[in-house]
Length: 452
Length: 182
Image 1 (cartoon, one colour):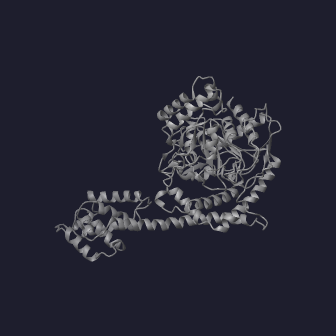
Image 2 (cartoon, helix red, strand yellow):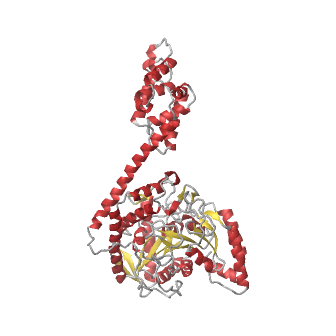
Image 3 (tube, chains in turn yellow, green):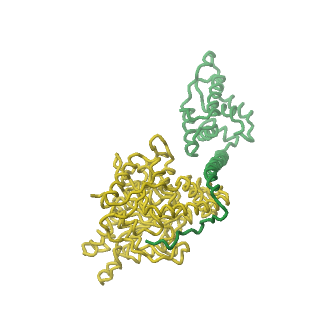
């Protein structure tokens, strides 16, 4: 179920907004065994649906999201609705205003059905939330859905909603998208407002959609992107059309195939699915360019240093260990030990990586790579097997995603195949800052080619 | 069953067996485990008169036996002693400790109804105090492990700092160049 299909059903009056919302809640109550949601907001959703129906009857159409059911990860401020961030610290926190993106989606006509479960404080990739329930992967409940936007991903993967909003600080949109077999985009840093979004690491946090297809991502971007005086890091740029018409081919588009890093420690089934997709890009007429890319292993170290320190700063006044899960507490403790000069120098090394990426975009338009080195790991295993090597699940899951948060480039994950046990494989499209429209366009073309 | 027991914890069982055979018992009882604990892990019994407690326990479990030759044999664990060793494992699990130490055996003995538990109570050995100390020890251990992890990260980061020249500014309020548009 995607946004365009729902749009058609709603406009043809095959179903009303109210009926669609009722069906969605009935479906969730019946089938959501994945602990996808922390709070359901049925009354408010129905009230909004009645309003949207009235508008349609009066000929007022807010666009493709009008009447479409969505959800927000539980760290987006929602006025009058509890916002927990999956943490005991915020278990009774009720914001008195909406995040900018929540507001924008509502004015685009989308109807939120509730707040999605997530990794505690978004600080982790398992979404095994000790306070609000472990999120289970709908493709196989014994496996991790990924995270931290785990509940957002499962709501879409299970087919309850076409889109749910998430955040990505070190892969938290792309990892769950990869493990659950859906699409997600982390837009350029500064493209989408972070106002009213509970921070994890200020300079690495990004807001973006997890959705059933590339077009749903593009339609969501149309609603949420753009400058916001309330977020000083949000860039003043004209808002482009994110859902560009589909071109016939990819002629003239330079797709970089990384010579280093991305195909070094990766499960062979993942590598082969990504190579198949690359072959498809070739058939679509793209120019494939084998490219040496910046040292992303080093960039990951810089990103981790910054994240640990910034997150420790966010939770500096919360020192009651009993309120935190063991994994989150351990990461906060590590952050408190990072020296001031180390953090500042990490931000300076970041400048160097920024320059290296600028140089990279002189040679290519889009970098094609796997999203995660493995498919969804088993929930009860602390490690994953990659060839001969055993690797910590968190470290492996974030390895291909984290460095991109350091430079702020837009990065999209889309499904590109399945492994031998039928689990989805995700690949990433990464491009220059503020080039989401062409990134989405190329991804849509590949998505269509892979489906046929 | 004993793979996860530390050396000290294993020695408690060894001493308990010794106590049992010396007092002429047919099996290792919970009281013998406590006697073993008193011999092996004295520091756990801060402010307790260990000599008096040992004497009292030995007096209570002593049995006259005709056949002294049995004494050297490998005495079996009584049902409740076995139960104590199993619940020591559960105590460790609950506290998220990977190994079973004398403290866990002591916690388990406090829970097992019988003469050993009553004696511990009489000498004011309380569960809360033991758990508190255990938690503190664990915090110190965890902190040092995490410090190692941070050092590892900083070591990996160090060579990158070599690339910095004075004019490189931090990217704290970083936003990519706004002039780049699609």
